[in-house]
Each structure stands twice: as structure tokens, then as C-alpha cells.
Image (cartoon, rainbow, N blue to C red; front, side, top):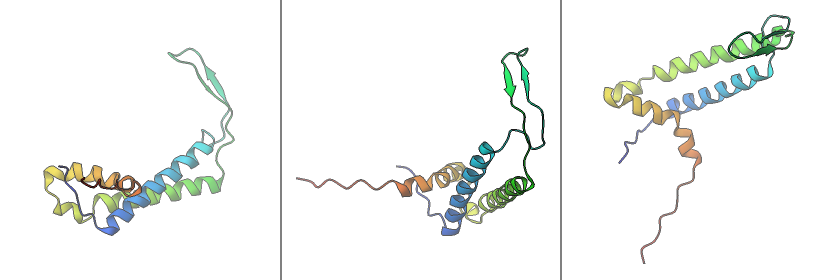
Length: 120
């Protein structure tokens, strides 16, 4: 039987926000040009695989600020979650398992419990 952990609500909320911030940051970085600074495009077929990049207009000041804000919040949340007082209550040998369960706690909450079958 798998061990269950009674995560504090602030730790669960911090982990959930960390997931959201990371998803937002990832989506933003995918939309932005490949280079922060304006650069010419290039093509290099001489390596072990061909690499091509179109010209990059660079990021605007607003885009740079948005990325910095999300990265800063991600850092704050990662420090909060990893340094939470809850981890001192978990036996050292179980901390990795507990951390992995915390990372996936939102998935368990989204999955509806299967109804128990009645005995005949």
C-alpha cells in the first residue's frame, strides 16, 4: 500500500501556483522570438544536423519584464515549496516519494474517485 501524506494547504497551494507559473512561462517563451536581442537569421548545414533560425526582432521591454516577473515568481515559489517546514516532519528516506506525490497531487484531485462496487 502506498504511503499517503497529509500535505498542508499552503504547501499544496504553493505547488499548484508553481505549476501554473511554469506553464505560463513556458507558453510565453514559446511565443517569443528565439533571441532576446535583435539578430540576423542563419543557416548551418555543416554540423551533425542542420540548424536554421529566422531573423529575430528581439524582445520588447514589456516582454522582457513579463519573463523576468514570471521567472522571479517561479524562483520564490520553488524556494517556498522546497524549504517548507513540512519536509522536516517527513522521514528522510521518504522525502523523495513525498515530493513526487506533492508534484502530482493536483492530478489526483482532478481524477474522480471510482465508485465502490457493492457486494451481491
